Amino acid sequence: MSGIIREAGGLLTTDEAATAAGLLPQELLARKNRSILAVPTKTGTGWPRFQFESPSTLHAVGLVLKNLDIRSPWMQLNFFLLGLEELGGIRPIDAIRAGNVRNAERAASHFGRHGAT
Image (cartoon, rainbow, N blue to C red; front, side):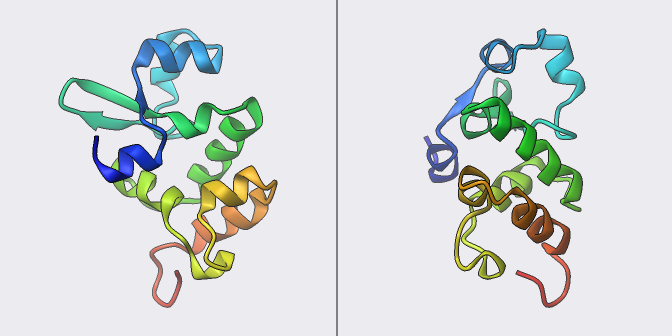
């Protein structure tokens, strides 16, 4: 397992992720990379486990994705796992876990823009 996948807690299959989210697989796929993060894998689609820790985490990931102006799923995943200067060196997923969803959303809206971290 690569480092980024390990940091994400591993990847769930579509069926596992649908069960964790309380959705049908087709509902989950319809929300892919708009409100639920998914990455392409050699065998199909992988769903980073961290976002399914709780309903509030899943909701917060969706809010952050809406503010993230990056379309590459792997870069989206990378964003959640980077220690950002704007967040005091904290990773966006850890800001979400600590209840600082607004800060993670704000960081997402600035991410990748000139002068932003």
